Amino acid sequence: MAASYPVPDPTIVDPCPATVRNGQCAPDGFTNNHHQQDKPPGQPEPFTTGQEMRITDSVEGEGLLESSMRLKPHEAQSYRKKALWVSWISIVVMLILAVAAFTVSFMRHSASAFGFAFEATLDILSSLIVLWRYSNAAAVHSAHREYIACVVLGIVFVLSSMCILGKAIHNLATRMPPEVDDFLYSVSIVSGFLCAVLAVAKFMLGRVLTSRALITDAFNSLVGGIMGFSILISAEVFKHHTDVWFLDGTIGVLIGLIILLYGIKLLKDMVPRVRQTRNYERFE
Image (tube, rainbow, N blue to C red; front, side):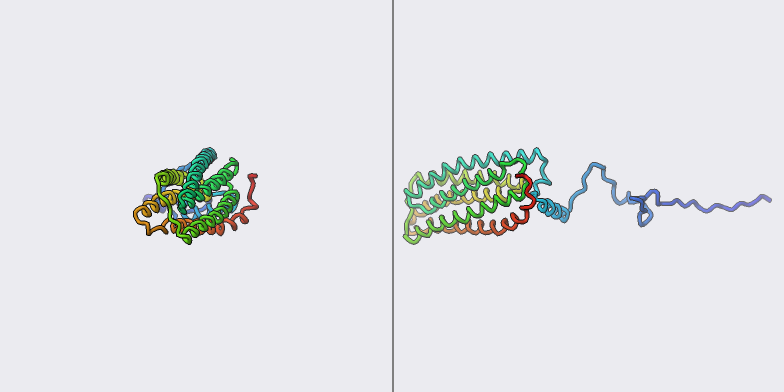
């Protein structure tokens, strides 16, 4: 009778070697290749919203803007130079428009023209502040330098709004109507168009560089464009309806209040940040 041999048990393959991850087995004993594919070594992991917020808080806590995480060094310098060019162009354009608007204001007794002239002067000052902000190539991502520029802008906004409000209220109190002529139309159309173009350019650069100072400068140019067109509107309305003499002064008051509120909010937001980041300034 042939000798019987025990039938071996079915081979059990240990799943652990195939599922080892950092020295540990997968909890279920199976590989997870069916659930997700391994990413190539060079492909970065996508950021979630929470991770992006933590990164933003981290870089600001180190005295840097969020742009330091987005832009490569050569890209940041390229946008910095564009910001400088736009600021210089803005200074030249707004200086010409300011002289023209002051002339219209004193010759035609226009509160809107005076308000725009002050707004153009404010635009020049804000562009000068932006020039200082980006004059240092090494400080392109400096949060402390950014916040200082914003505080100065806030102070300038508040002071300028006082002058605009004072002139507009005086014209309303004395019932002073504006005089209308072709020169007023020309100044309003040109100033409104150029300020709108400058505002778009500054806003786009401010978004890329995550610069509140540039975005504030863009807001200032946008207000200048609105005031330029408001001169045209108030003059046209007064030309056909002389009883609406107060429209010009009313627009001046509204613009002054907008600039005042924006300046106060800017100071409220930026003064604490200047104090928080002063210990991280490493570029001067």
